[in-house]
Length: 408
Ligand SMILES: [Zn+2]
Image (cartoon, rainbow, N blue to C red):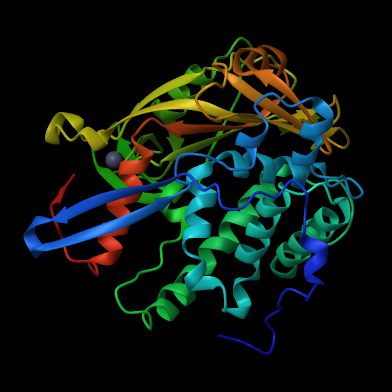
């Protein structure tokens, strides 16, 4: 670790962090007993806050004034960052993964990005606007340290910011994994690799000699071309359809076919709708075509026929939409809408709309109607028992990487 160049969070007066809305001691704690049969061990796991967000659950009947606590102030055209963070915070498995591994990154100077992300999540419990500005400015500075594109206060591309944050979190993995080796019985998990990363198999086939070459690539999102009248399902199907490829084959043919398919499926699938494209004169154009925002997606990794592996099939539900509002690629405004998963009395399909410091109630169906021409990043969560997935990972970590049979 490079402690000389690493930054740490500047100290702040403790009182500055206090908030009248902050709640303590009401954790929704469950005790789950896990028997690891092959190891002859019994492990009790306390699962805290795994199925609820204590902040959002405090506001099932809130007015829009009260909901404003959940918003982020705009610090000179920072709506691209605010919207990206709100969408990431809607992915509870992702932010919980970061919080659960605090023991691994808390004292590592170069892991400021993870500390900053958690500080922003915690700031959602506060109506102290100065605290929010402080944590948001700190986070932006941390990202800009590795990616100077985000240093100034001009409007940026939310997709590029999203990619930069994820890449920087992934870059920390080797260091944190190595540092975690000093903690007996524990193993560090990268939040991006655990939840957003997936692999695709790219196959090039020559039509003349039938020769094939394959490559495997890792992705954290897919960028989809748009055509008028598209649905998200159609745009994704087209991405996975075999396409001609200019390529010199050793048989002398100049054209091959290329096809992509999923090798693994992520817990969160992020789709980027390509709304900015270059004209023949290299001027940038905004694509305002309406896209039918599919609420559900069904994917398979191409292994199901061979293995009957249930992991090969994935059902996904839309949980967040990040939109770019504006006709021009050089201006405009970013907003985020995210599903609200509160306690039992929450109305079905309840969503929140985040427009910087303004937050309002909406619904998933309303979002899909309103954002057809502006949706830019779509976040789909895989429909699995997230609690079970979390327990499985904890057992794997607790057992030191030994393969075990999990029985609950
Ligand atoms: Zn050939």
